[in-house]
Length: 362
Image (cartoon, rainbow, N blue to C red; front, side, top):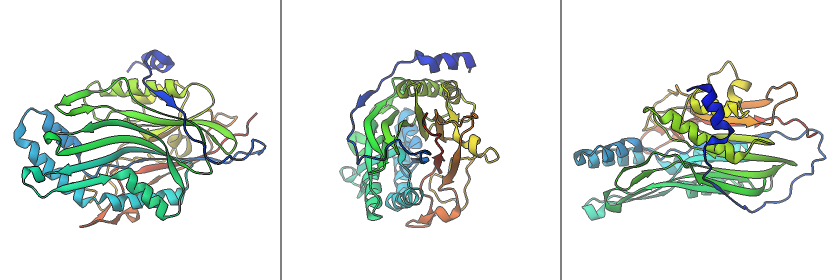
């Protein structure tokens, strides 16, 4: 994509579809009197619905009804094997170890399946966010949902199957004072691909006070896939998000951004002044985050793509560099947990945890 075109996008040619929603505040934090502000810790985690739902959507959208049920039954078998409750407990353990101020969550699924009307004894009700919240509470961790956005609901087979896809943002209570919570779907989306399937993507964000400093932090999940034109769609979606977050102050954009370094969406963020924290802090490590096998059964990581990112603006040191540290979670064999049939990864993506140093306020 022409870099000048990307720069124009980043300057605000795309429309913004979101509305800010005031959010409740937590306990007050320290004053700005501290000489050296504490690091900002953020985490991005794609929760993964537990099966290759793209294969189901593709079967429903191809116009051939003969393969629809087979795709659905394969997805149900995989979902059963990838025990979402065990995986949410594993992600709660990751949060416990990292203690981030903010956690951006993508593919926050709510799945309801009842095939008894079709003569099949299959009933599934799975709420991923509720399960994660319960796992955090069981560890004594006080995180709350500061922002949540409903992207789409897929309800094929006459409503016997329903998948809700959300984005959400958790914040640490008592450590993050939320002044404003935001969320929205992008104006640019794929849209309807089959009856009952309207694919829309979105984002969530907050304006918050953390250790005496104000931040604007957003988490996004733009469109996935490599079909022609989708790279430009992701660039348009990230342009919307850049406009929402604004051009001033300390800004962080995290998420499963579904594209490679150097892509059109990546250029949008760079043109808007954002630095990719991974190559800034670990230039010798590729930092691949995608993807484990759909059934999460691979014994060692097979990650070969960049998909999950932490971008920062307004946090640079005086010499223009970025201070801090960054690492992956869910990428080592020891991160697997026991599933019903075999050890499973917490998600099909690795997560990213960044501890970003902040220079003292002027």
